[in-house]
Image (cartoon, rainbow, N blue to C red; front, top):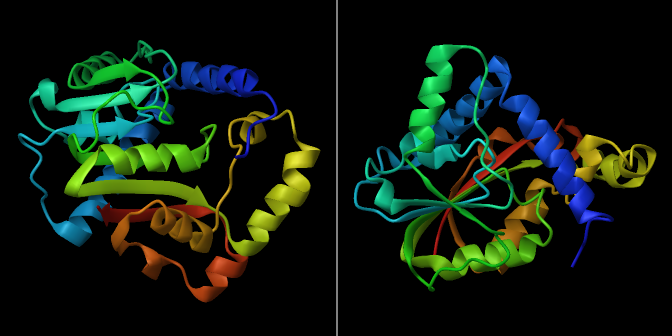
Length: 237
């Protein structure tokens, strides 16, 4: 298991970044856009999925308390649960309409304080589990995925995405960037890095059956030499 050199320091930096985000119009809009892109991917593969009456868990929803779940899950908060180790923040961008909209979205999700490595839920208790741009930030991504698999119902949907590097970019990140900029926010907040191939294997080893991905977005040359990009997967149990 890989551990960040200073997990508490990494969490402090994460919170600082989110506090800046909570006061920035464009950063908040970027978070909404990221969730919308994930929804667009889901619809491109599965069409309109049924969420009403489905019990949904989002692992690492982020301190805005919105995630994919706040925008696209059930209208009934009783079915929308998220786990997040950092405190949920009040958004204050100064743009009243946006701030009120975020407050409305936050009220749609029951956020539980905790870590993805140790989910306090019974096995096979969720119809949908979401893990969006999370596992490169966590302490132990193997445990997070293992727990996500455990709490997902048989035949349930696992919605997953993470930023990945090309083979060259990943080598540069681990050999040069992490050493040269060891105290930077970017390095401290990303203790893990993946290529498309490695994250595909990690999901399979965690027990998930991969039904859809955005593999077509990655040519062989992009996988070897391209810039970092989001890998998205829809999996079942």
